[in-house]
Each structure stands twice: as C-alpha cells, then as structure tokens.
Amino acid sequence: MKNVNPIIAKLLAHIESECSAVDREAVFDQCLDECYSFDSVGGPFAGMCPSSVLKEVDPIAHRCGVNDYFGTDDSYTEVAGETYLHADLEEARESFIEDLDADIAGLESEIEDLDAEDDTKELAKKQRQLAEMQADKAEAESYAF
Image (tube, rainbow, N blue to C red; front, side):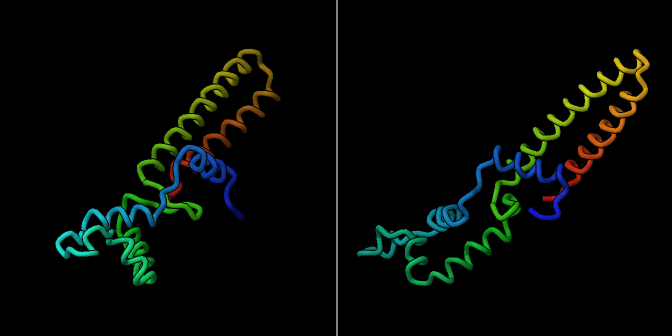
C-alpha cells in the first residue's frame, strides 16, 4: 500500500484481521442457484446447478455475472483488493475508532497528571501526541470505503 496515510494503513490492517473476505464467485453462485432451477426441465438436467452449467458452458458470462452482481449490490465493498460485507467493514472501523478513543482518553489522563506537576516540556510533547491522535481518529472516521 504505497502513499497511504499510516493511520489508514493501520485501519486496513485492522479490517484484514477482523473481517473475513467474501468469496465473490461463491456468493454469486449461491444466488444463481437459489433463483433458478433445472428441476422443471427434467432428465439429466434435473440435478444440475445453474451456476455450474453457466460456468462450464460460458465462463466469460459467468465472470461478467459475478462482476455485475457485485457492482450493483451495495451490501458488499471492495477494500485493498478483497470484497467484504459493508456492515462488517463499518463494525471493524467502529472497533478501531473505539481503540483510538481509549488511547486518547489515556493520553488525556496523562496530560492532566503532567499539568498538575507543571512539567512543561513533557506536557507539550503529550499535547502534540494528543493532537496527532485526534487527527488520526478524524482521518479514520472520514475514510471512505
């Protein structure tokens, strides 16, 4: 991931560890098999799966079907070359931001303690860290999948 903000790289790594990528072809095949059937055709076709037939007879049409299906279904989102359920991505983002919030709260507590001790050099350092963490949080919240 070249030219990616470090916090976004961490968010993407979090997503990769927390979410399971969707097998696009398997999802499309399942949808195709649920919507269509060869039962009424009978004979040797009665037990065949429409997805298998399409894949064998016209693999290009099958690939186009997969791409069309995922191009029109908003419940799936592609991130870093993998397809995920959009709801899973949002849940992973929320947990990532909650972790950032916990880190920010801890740093704010440290700053309060330093403020009471009147350690200006360390206080300034922690305040810069806090500003960076808050900017990172804002970046993660605004990142569009």
